[in-house]
Image 1 (cartoon, rainbow, N blue to C red):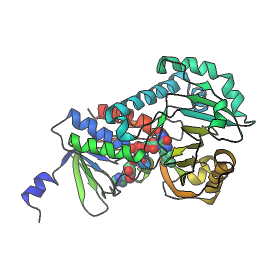
Image 2 (image 1 turned 90 degrees about the horizontal axis):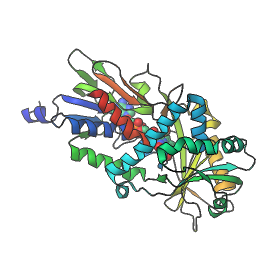
Image 3 (image 1 turned 180 degrees about the vertical axis):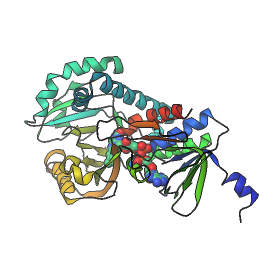
Image 4 (image 1 turned 45 degrees about the vertical axis):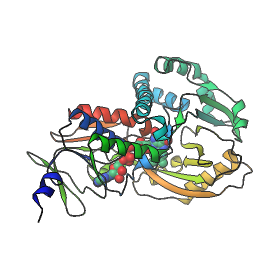
Length: 374
Ligand SMILES: Cc1cc2nc3c(=O)[nH]c(=O)nc-3n(C[C@H](O)[C@H](O)[C@H](O)COP(=O)(O)OP(=O)(O)OC[C@H]3O[C@@H](n4cnc5c(N)ncnc54)[C@H](O)[C@@H]3O)c2cc1C
């Protein structure tokens, strides 16, 4: 019993439906709407608000730690690895320009990689440190990384022997970022529908039908799947492997010395100051198989490892308390770190697999997806 008004204004076929209201889906919708002001662009999100990695991450606005970049260069060759580092670098600038630092809570706190005493990784990184800076100079236009071991004590870290620093990275408030992108989407004319869990994709000759789990359905000319770590439920044939990341946040720590974003253990641990306390995540390497899941959840093994790191390295001698714990889902390929931006058929495209770098690269992937749709 729909009225003519409901049918024309609310349930009419959309030109483009984007599934997933993370950073990628929202920016792709915004860019498509800007290019096609007359199109009806709709974003469907299963949660009551964005509930993917974009709203559950650590908020590092970073383009890669020395060990991460050197590992990528070794694994993929310098052209591929540096091209991605450049995309992240450009992405961070575009993100800040699109939304504004104040709106996303961006602070240029600096990026760090900490090497524990006797860590075997350190000599391997130290050996190629200058070479890495040379390779990055055309991207950042300056010397990117420097050793600053004196800062270890200033940050209150214990059991850390070396600290690589850069002044070009910072931290954001991921909740503020998502609110800012949602605002921009609304201003641009994009419709965002929450509690809209897409059950399947049914492509016909002239349209795509997207049945929702609530029994209704959306119809559109084209669809972009931006569901990242949850993609397998809709497109199981794609090489998109979910990877859970567990995080905790302490209550405020009086006189906290830690400031900035820190990576450790090849990026498998990451921590920063947040709301007066310490936000710490990672530990996936302790149980790769178990953490290859899109299920929410915390495990004693990883939570204990995180708390151990707080006790021994980040907050030694401090009687801290954990205020909050959560998990989020990333997505990787089984081979390498490249995002997957692809047209799967005439009407169905995909932009997923952001790894642990979606804050920086998400906006670039969204642009690429928008070009592909055009
Ligand atoms: C714990 C953790 C820490 C991280 N830290 C950082 C960091 O510090 N810096 C950084 O750059 N990156 C970080 N990342 C990675 C970054 O958050 C992601 O790469 C990025 O947010 C991915 O964005 P996205 O839009 O592709 O996916 P998501 O943000 O995951 O969005 C996908 C959306 O699709 C929705 N969805 C899924 N299935 C359906 C369906 N069937 N119907 C409707 N909607 C659906 C989901 O609810 C979700 O909102 C971290 C990730 C995690 C998990």
